[in-house]
Length: 179
Image (cartoon, rainbow, N blue to C red; front, top):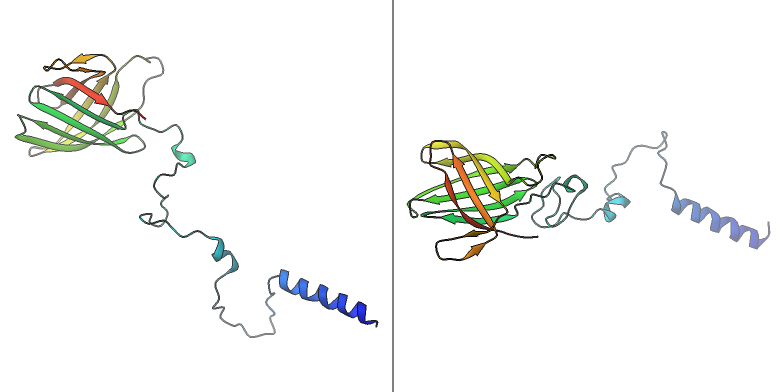
């Protein structure tokens, strides 16, 4: 053989050996592989606060497209009562209701189930439960996009009505956070 051919053959053999993963030989004894797989270097580490199987915060996945609540945050109030609503993900919300000039408080959760296709002008409706000292009670919150003027002559773009089983309806004005 000529030296040039031998060098070419060696180069091809080295390249082939480096590019292929080793094949297990049944005649060789099995050895424990202590090295991390080559793909492990390419897998990103989870971000802080994201557990196994969770998406990092601030990322929108395909399953979230079109599932954004029209109520990211809302503060409403009336005579001797107030409500705070905060979206917690997809169509779910945390609700805090205070009444009796602040002496009574209850918290709960509500869900936006969408607007019927045949009723585009209807109010935004959230349904859920409010848990207070008397236990959990069904609750419905209606937020209407209509001007509302409070007792201090301040104008608001939304009006709100809160219905809790066994209680008087709370009616007042509010401010819906915008995206």
